[in-house]
Length: 499
Image (tube, rainbow, N blue to C red; front, side, top):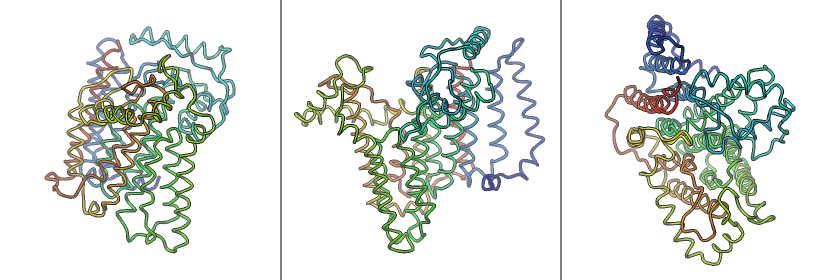
């Protein structure tokens, strides 16, 4: 907390308090013009978000170049909060009903007999109708006899802890159910933003690159809803932030705390999706010169080996002992995981061709809209090329002398981990979700690539092009561009529809 406070320019905030107060007053006046004769809380929140962002960029206009982590935090929290509270009170994210119930099952350990929310939930963009639905939902929650069963905390479901904590707290505070539902979404966003904030702060270079990727509208949307994707993305980012920072400082000694955080972040983050275990392989690039004694280096290597085996075993052992099974029924009646594995093993050449044809389109940057500006069941938003241009700008210009320490071995290992992880993702969904011998791959979502984007682009960049802009101006333009895309998408898909 002290580090956070040190990063704030309190003198600047105090000096500009009058201007900030005037901006808030202007927001209320503008909100009055927008609302006309009826109060629309969502439009008010939209106007307030704009004012808060404008205030932040004004106050921190001379600090954002050196401390971009605060720029990320402001945009993520303001735009993400607007998203989390403006989303319809129904399931809008991929398989959100499943993720919600898992979070609820964890919360039931603290508050036994919590309300079990049904798979189908009514929702309306009419404020009057939604108000009636909220009243009905809240009353059902109080008298419902359908209660959720508590689920034990495991390695795989730890990703639901932030949402579960919020649901349990909401129950203990006797919050109305519709508020508690949105509150838990918001807590998930808060957790994501905090973890990524410290990841950006840890980096020696690539701070804006990580900021832009973490601010992809799809990434913020995931963080502002029930899921485990944002947990994986956040912890992989802080793991790589520690790893890359250490690799770029070969003369600096690695402390025990730093080693535990670095390895532990990957172990925690990969729990819900252990297929990403190849991302841990660059940990073996840490050299013995980073330690005070050879014994410390050996301990670190053994810690890393055990960590990789733990993650790998969490999904490999069930496959070895119980086989592939029948597969996911959501993939259709033609899905049969056992027969699919037999096909792959019997004709690896045919499968390799199917894999290559699909994966080449899957990782094509022109198809990146699926993991940058797509908000699941709500639809896509405008601004794909703005996001891509912003990403290209930080990829080229967010560099400094530390990038010279990115070795060829480091680049090859990270690129290799990227390729292997993509192959594992595609193969896993081909086995469990795709009809036997299909020439395509079902269920392979673009959002699965989000945790892979930062490490890949980080190691591919070189210190070759000088940034022609002042850092304060450059960073401000980047954050404003991402804010505009997020705000416009939230307005078009949600806020403008409320009446």
